[in-house]
Length: 110
Length: 117
Image (cartoon, rainbow over all chains, first blue to last red):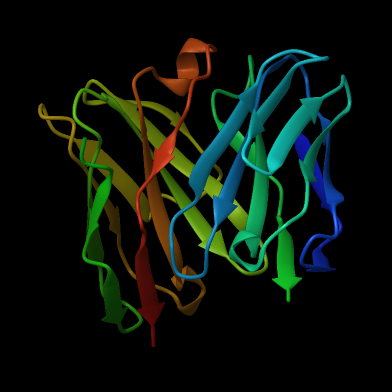
């Protein structure tokens, strides 16, 4: 069965303090890895899709990378508005669904 | 372009009742997937509909069912509600079905918060 593990569960950063969130996966036949941001009481907001090892994508202060076993979401010089839960999900050739990790709760303080 | 809409946003029901939730996908999207989100389990896949056909189903009891209409709008029904069904129910739309094995972006709606008393 596909498994997705995110770490850390929670992360508190000061504004401007860069860090990385980890998403490790054990799946059969990865077809796509997704990153979402979720604010309290709202649905997940799509950030990135990565399809193959070595791929990288950037958006403002966020950069997502992918290896054969894990993905990282790098946050450079975060601001308080980056505070949210970040979710990672995988899609495989066999499961025909997205399997989500439990997320990393990020808090950025002044 | 309008996003995914879900109605109602909040629901309070009692044990044993049934409930129907509605989801309207992004215009042109024919795939609708449903997820249950709880603090302990995270997002769990319920089922996916594409062109009015259920394409895949997660590990949930038969009390959870759904359907899709010709305009791609989808409904989810939960019968004989239990306390453990309290959750945020999310739907997501995509232009291609997950079962195609070719994953592209899934866009989520704001969810329906269901509370079972």
